[in-house]
Image 1: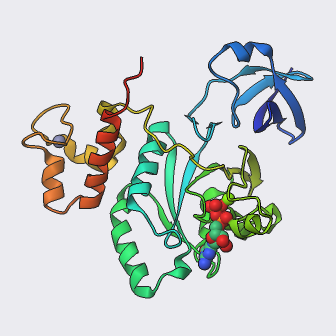
Image 2: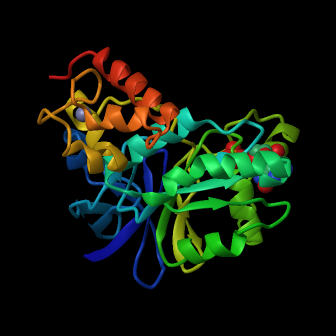
Length: 288
Ligand SMILES: Nc1nc2c(ncn2[C@@H]2O[C@H](COP(=O)(O)OP(=O)(O)O)[C@@H](O)[C@H]2O)c(=O)[nH]1
Ligand SMILES: [Mg+2]
Ligand SMILES: [Zn+2]
């Protein structure tokens, strides 16, 4: 019996790597078929010549993409093409925070902005710097590529962001040997847009990175109404001054969050997104 880590899953076949970076093609033992939890990419496992026998308890995990034991999630969003969306950013932050993984915000394609547009976007994102690292980057101007290498190296990183945000291009520009398919290439091949189909950890600057098929379902199925505000570190800091314990920050009198929104200490748009997500979760069918 050996110990290793799952780095790839395609068609029910797992690739496991041991401490010496030897690779093994394995199947999960039949037992996993009868459990809810199948082994995931990122799992630490015990295995023999042809099967995964045991999966170690996970530090954290994502459902879509299915990946476990991640050090940080890079939330990648383009400054333009497609336009930067604070709603999408807040949505990713809620989902990543709920998984217990540390988010890092990466804004790509800054070369497409005028100086004025760049200043405006940076000013709006300043608010997020209290809780998150925010990095502005471009594969054209090479802005901050070294910095992103520095913060990802030696770690297990997962990329989150919509198709076209520039995830694969960013990785290629930091390590040309990766040679990941980008939008331009996949269009030329006529393969449509979703070129990254499976979850895989690839070696990246002494660590690992997963260029995932994307968070295809950005829904809040695992999050309850009561949980939502706990996923906003900025709300939590002021919530202790709310008049009512367990305040939802939606309608209660004496709500410190609402007060801070009125005083422009919390951006209106971020609060509006909170209300939107709150309604979305409320409309979900209860899970039993
Ligand atoms: N101008 C500019 N275009 C970029 C940059 N990064 C990516 N792109 C383009 O954005 C498109 C989508 O990039 P891709 O890496 O495939 O995005 P992914 O779907 O998130 O992996 C491609 O046409 C890239 O050439 C950038 O920094 N600047
Ligand atoms: Mg891609
Ligand atoms: Zn409140």
